Length: 267
View (cartoon, rainbow, N blue to C red):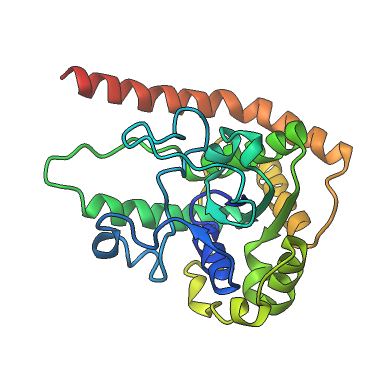
């Protein structure tokens, strides 16, 4: 399969729309369930979600409820959207090519906060509001997980920046369509709209753990992808060192969130 991945609010839905308009068959719905009524504001052109977004493996395929099975054979040229944690959990037999999109961390943080506010505003009265991971820690955790997964499993990967798609759509999309091996570039590029960028050069005050040095590293990671630069060994070593600093903080936030869920279930 052609797997479109990234964090939430990084352009994964945009890329599914691009590939669909290129003529590539997709797996997923533009507006699953009642999302068209509740979340259209966040993604007017659709989300392209599927029941497999959290990973394609023995727990999700066959479908535990219906028994429906998707075979890797015959779906090599189908596109499916999996967020990074889902890709990491996906059996390698389903991973033919991966298009990974990355967004500047400050923009992501503002955008994911906006999405969470929209989601929370549509919850039923009295419904539990989830304990979310701090946005910039989520950005780091997932993008680092992608790089680690790629280093271990070495599947065909094309990383693309959010900026390149919006600033030079025909060139950027053309390069990826050529890499995939099929698709109508002009039709695919025609879906790109300036309105896709909802967060522009925003001021953002990060978590106290994000020092000036770490913020600069986040920026450099994005810039390297944006400029098509290699991730040399010394840079990868800096990424690993940063993860050692941030991982305990991330794990603590996850543990707190899980504990809240456990307490609420007991109540």
